[in-house]
Length: 355
Image (cartoon, rainbow, N blue to C red; front, side, top):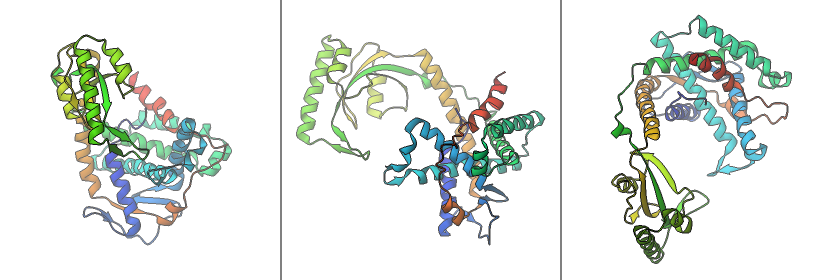
């Protein structure tokens, strides 16, 4: 899994600030540099660092091919929420690269650099990736070995500064705080989900019918009818069994579920989706609780990192090369199928750390 250390929200904010420079405006904390010109292939600048078109195209093409491997090459003809998917992908890649570049600047401010072993890993990763490219890919991406090496250096440096910032963040998480329970539930929906993602509530008459049905289900469960059969017969949720911790579900559902003892059944619980009847299977799932502890620790670390990163990024001067940005498009060529940039990073860096 790649991007395990990126703080996505912060990356998108930085990308939005770069895009806002197209119109010559930004938020109060965005310091836009009014440059007289870029180097031929510079897409954007952050202070004294920049991103070249060739770097951007490696990321963009990698993401493109990963998407197409799952959804097929025709995915780019679709639109989501009225947004062109190709443009959305470009903006997501801009977010990712701008964050990496910002983190290299943060590393410089903190005096963090790559050691000899890490530089060797960079060389190894760059050679592996560059050698994996066909002549057509090298030509269309317009890359050489030095460009690829610089990209892996940036990626490794961003990784290292994140790890150093969070290195002392090891909070003790109690079983109670991380407690994960397992329940079964029957959902009687009182809303219709529309194709555009919005929901339409049922009429009061329809809601009352649903409530009466939920009461019947609750009574059957309380009288000993197998809960699994009730799920199969009545539930509008394909997932009948859920394991979750505090803060992961809607308040009404969570409160009712966490107040149940093992094998206890709730009354009818109203949520934003409809009426719920909940049966507690386990008040403490050891395996899931341990996983949740790690999730909580990672969240705390991200919060600490985010505080320093956000404050640092607010002060950065930034500018986007409008004409070059608008000229960039996906490469549609069957001979361009590279998708292993991040996989190679993992094999050269993360696996080495686990040894």
